[in-house]
Length: 74
Image 1 (cartoon, rainbow, N blue to C red):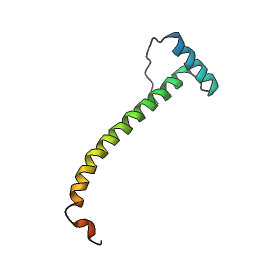
Image 2 (tube, rainbow, N blue to C red):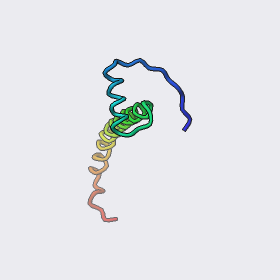
Image 3 (cartoon, helix red, strand yellow):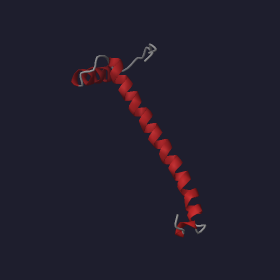
C-alpha cells in the first residue's frame, strides 16, 4: 500500500488514547490506529448510504409488488 504522509494536531487526551490503543492492540504505529479509526468511519458512512438506498429501492419494489406479479409462480 502506498502511503502519503500527513501531519495532524490533536489534543493530548486523544494522543494518549491513540498510544494506549496502539499498545493494548499490539499495533506497530499510531498511524495504524488512525487508519483503523478512519476505516470504521468509512464503513459507517457506507452503511448509512446503503440504508438510504434501501429505503429508495423498497418504495419502488412495493410499487412493483402491487402490479399483481407477486402471485405468479416462476
